[in-house]
Length: 158
Image (spheres, rainbow, N blue to C red):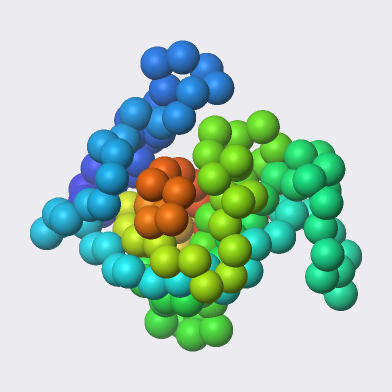
């Protein structure tokens, strides 16, 4: 319980930016830490946060008005109760890192690091709700990184 609270605080502090609108102040480049699980994997899908079910072609405007959702070919950090889930990051519009996310393509090589699960609260049971897992992603082609949650709503949210 203390570990989960510390991870949540670490993620919060790591995502703080000294100037609004700038990239989070995380260490750049590929990470090699024993305490943070990371895997090399590939991008499966890049799409606007909001869209229609069968939509396959997206415009820049689709991303700009709704945000970005990227899914990866790894189950890192995914609870075993959700075996069909993949690691992913979802951002709202105008979020730092969206430009990197929008430029990714299926098959791109990335490093995905699992920063932690959501903290259990009266509204959030991480064993029953797959949302709120936090990731940091490094894109090898773009030499850029971003971080975020795996869903548009946190664990126990809307």
